[in-house]
Amino acid sequence: MSLLRLGRRKDKKDELRKVLGDYNLPSFPGAVMQVLQTIRDPQASAGSVAEVLAVDPGLSVRVLRVANSPVFSPVRKVENLAQAVALVGLTELESLVLSMSVRSSLPTDAADGYDFSRFWLASARRGFVARALASILCPAWESESFTAGLLQDMALPFLAHQRSKDYGPVLREWHSTDVRLYDLERKAFGWDHAEVGAWICGEWDLPDSITSAIGGHHPKEGAAECPASVALSACLREAEERPGVDDFIELAASRYQIDRERAGEIIESAFQRAEEFTRLLG
View 1 (cartoon, rainbow, N blue to C red):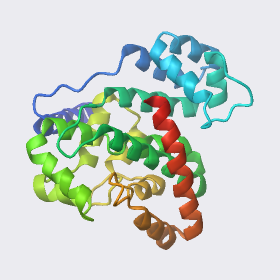
View 2: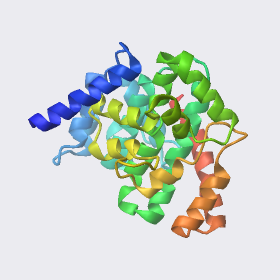
View 3: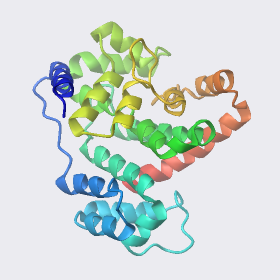
């Protein structure tokens, strides 16, 4: 790693410490990191990945459960990890493993303005919307769009717990008004959850493409480049009375010429799949 990159990483770590205080982020389990390294190996096979995946029984069970779900619609029941890896595919499996691992690292206790079940369902909706949009706008980025869409607000649980006194009121205002969250954050703190999310990605050594998409999913000067599929999915909110669906349909039509009826179908399908996905992962 170059000295310049080391310096940038230290700066981001310092910024993250300023925002979260003395809080220590949970580390990814060693078995998970080994699975991800094996998946990224050009010589990887379904058998070799399954062998490493089997070291983590909890992760193995969740992968099998997802492989047998309507998300992948297998012709017959998937009974072992090698079959699951072959069905899901290495690129898709990397997204699943990342998503499952991040989910297990997030705080789940309620905090002012934060409810985990509501947060995770909204995250899953963004992930499936982003994937559907990528199939239209950038097919080569479908899997990464799902991961970045799902994890784009990953900083919220940590901020809600570590800064409950000043961040909780911001979340409550976001849920009860039409003001965008990052506008409220920039006004109150000078930073936003997209920046903090990117810093967390750096701490966890997530792929650069995912880190950039998370850091740039809200348009602002100096933001990292973000695929349109992920940026559009950011219109969706947690509050059911203000889900952001109308904003999404309007932007999809005006910016990317996606028929409004088609955009509505994307929302309906994604919301259904998100319900199943969150049920599977808990």
